[in-house]
Length: 72
Image 1 (cartoon, rainbow, N blue to C red):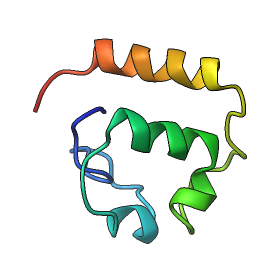
Image 2 (image 1 turned 90 degrees about the vertical axis):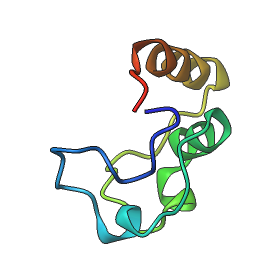
Image 3 (image 1 turned 180 degrees about the vertical axis):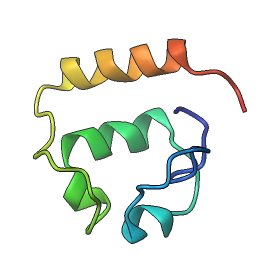
Image 4 (image 1 turned 180 degrees about the horizontal axis):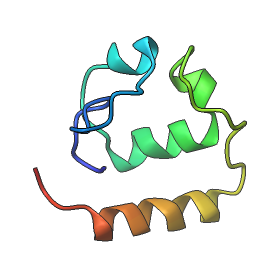
């Protein structure tokens, strides 16, 4: 996920138009903001959860995604 262009995973076609319209890549900071408030960062996203308030939980998720990501 980190370093990948937003709304661009190959083989995944269920991105909302709002996510497809995003420009740039996922960074730690951008992903942190999105996980905290998906609708606030990408209004109209299909992400159906309110977000993760706890900064430590978000950091753990981002750490996991950064370790399991393969460069593209």
